[in-house]
Length: 392
Image (cartoon, rainbow, N blue to C red; front, top):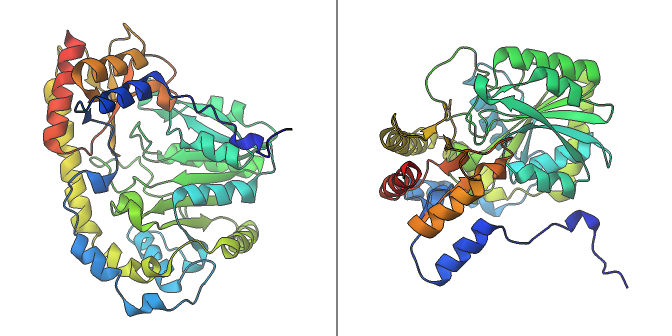
């Protein structure tokens, strides 16, 4: 008799070579310099825990008065973030979720029938594969052109937008590429989505971590387009507080389509009511901490980026690809062996954990990905060992 399991959960759970090597090293009790760590609560950032705890201790948290879209005071606090970016966004266009993953799931359910397609960038974070399968949609990748700073290949994106395409997903800045969406790209995407009856989903969770100033960048896609658009953001990256579990969807578009989208999303939200009351009550106070929190994160990102520049300076055969922001660095390494082989060798020989490029769907070998969040001493030693191994 067939087991009562859905085909959508029939993943290949066999561990890859890197996972096997990591588990073996840990069983032997051997240390690991983890250059993949991206959980800010494990990186010694010294975030103001006491202030965050005070914000979460209000007596108002003991009352339960649910609003499907989220408490208005919380949505007003989110709307104020967009005012700072020059966008007036009514709180009624904002819905709170427990995470951006949940927001994606709601949007996939809102926009697509089973078997419909979502256009996603490549390379990009691998989470979308799981979300797509769980929500019965098909991913159609469109390429980012590395030689042009990971700009969108708009011609290939148009070609990928077949009759079952329901949305284009962009990540700005990209994870792990660090490339921001540009104004001319957004204009093209807006027109394409409007012409083809598609929605635009813009993931801006790393948007506060840009490097330098560039007037070509899109500050936010919220409120600035004609097509039905959903901007995703949250506290996981903005406040380095993934454990408080709050994110949001900010919706924009033409009145008729926007009103229908918000009405349907409200029913989805009311079905689950996933966001806990304490974090909603605390949100205005939590957001007041963001300058201090982000300054600590940015200091760590800058320090570890300098270590990469120091160790991989010319004529070293490896180098970091240019990045406009985010929490990751992509390292270009000699393609003398597969990326997975580089990663396994670094772990087994040097105790350094990195991610091979194929995790992110890079189209060719010669890419390793590291997080810029690990503690500085760990990162300095790890990137030094990596540099020595590759140079040797």
